[in-house]
Length: 341
Ligand code: HEC
Ligand SMILES: [Cu+2]
Image (cartoon, rainbow, N blue to C red; front, side, top):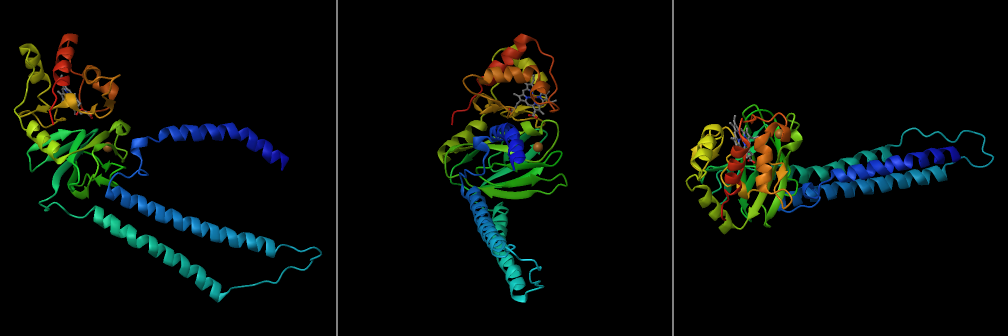
């Protein structure tokens, strides 16, 4: 007994540090335990149901076990083996039927909710339709009804059903916004998966790729930004305005030749890379460099453009050969490319 306690005491600091380490892994805004919309609330309710049932089972099983340990322990002076019991029809029926009932209680709402999440709203006229394409290592969002495409920040109106059609441009990824919904894969076999959720409250919700998809999988994030319906309409209108190019003609020339071969702004450029319209007002650069007071968007843009491979190893943007002035000029132009909405 003493020895065991000694060993336990020695292990205590290790266990405490592991607990600390693991708790640092949890990011507050990446938690399914703080649902912010009805779909995520549904999943959370299922978790609560499952855990409640498990706790009840645990209490009953351990209660009976403790009772049996005490009641049937070897009594003082007892020498013969206790009475041997083999089989008990009544008991066996009970411990088969009860678990079956519990599984049924869990299965019915789970199946209902899973099918509800994947229900097809692609023909729903009241829904906002978004075509999601996952790429190594970024998310593309297209709004077919508005002729608008964006990346990394998914802008949605509050209280409207958002109907998603999801596919991948390369390998298997998984679309996951823990506080708004469960996960849905984007399959490489060409299947288009359907999915939907709503966000009742304005706010920015963190999303993440939830399927190991390559070197920078862990850096493949996105944001869902829920805004008022009026604000959403203004955003769509601003996205549809003609492209604003750099004022400095030399920077404009470099930007057109070196960047618009892959990227698009407004009505110009190509579809191979994230659409950069309004990038100066987004939450992040390349989904992982968070724009805030200590990391202003221009700094993040310079960091990215100078060496994209250093920020997100293995991503498909090559390091473009530019002078420091060109990088500064382009970063300045993009940082000021903001949309009012
Ligand atoms: C060969 C195609 C290609 C070229 C040329 C290219 N990029 Fe990119 N760029 C990409 C791809 C692909 C990504 C997405 C990387 C990722 O996040 O995985 C990207 C990401 C970005 C991002 C982050 C976008 C976002 O949504 O946050 C910025 C900013 C950017 N590029 C700027 C530039 C600039 C400026 C140039 C010109 C100097 C340039 N790119 C040239 C392919 C290209
Ligand atoms: Cu991915």
